[in-house]
Length: 331
Image 1 (cartoon, rainbow, N blue to C red):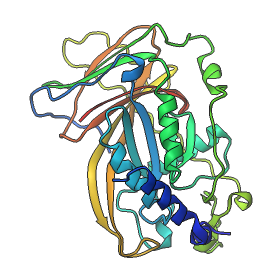
Image 2 (image 1 turned 30 degrees about the vertical axis):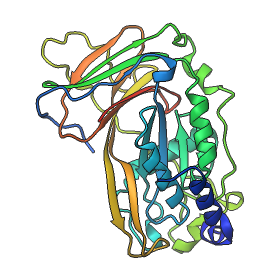
Image 3 (image 1 turned 180 degrees about the vertical axis):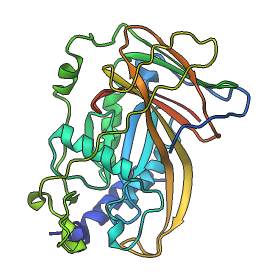
């Protein structure tokens, strides 16, 4: 049974009921307007924002409740909610105006890490370790609350300055030991998964018709291998910064990433499964770029060039797209 058929049997109406129950309401560049705007310091357990990634698409009939949820989450300071629009529903009849193949590939890497052969929308990944079906709004909220109880492993401070984006990070007393770090994190027993209601196979033979690519989880073939993320050179520190603590991408146990997003947009969808919908979207990712690696053996201290006034998020994540140990934002 296809995802479209299963949605018609009641999944979407159930999802929208859940949503109503909780009150729904690509490249770093040079230059920056002068002045410090705002900084956020993740210093204690209660001040560590939870990173939520929503994989969604304008052409996905089951995604509107998750997209509505994002509007509420966007106003919260204790959650950094990011919407990554994927491109694999474009064939239905409406090409997502925010979609980027790189976000599909990021979702594929999570699938491989969790041992899944398929990906789907709406899918939520929380702190790199928890996967929840995006229309299960109450479950998403419960997972966020559970993640907020974790101790802070990194103090992460950001500020816009005349020189660009200032990033300072240092491990706390709760930071995990460096020995066998990847093995320890990969074996976390709390990496919960959920049954996949609607999935999309990432393998498509040239002879297959487009409608044959959307399948139920029990019949989907193995997911195609995605290309690894691009390797970017670490940006040069501002003059006088000295040692930054940042190494080349792939050289350390943690990768430091810079994300830019657009706070809100409205799109009139003219075709496909959501034809006729005037959809409101929040926190739409426009760029997701690794800038270097960090071993946590010394503080991180650098300033990178930054363009424009869109919000910026810095994420410290286990290499191999594992656990997110720190995230902070400047709006």
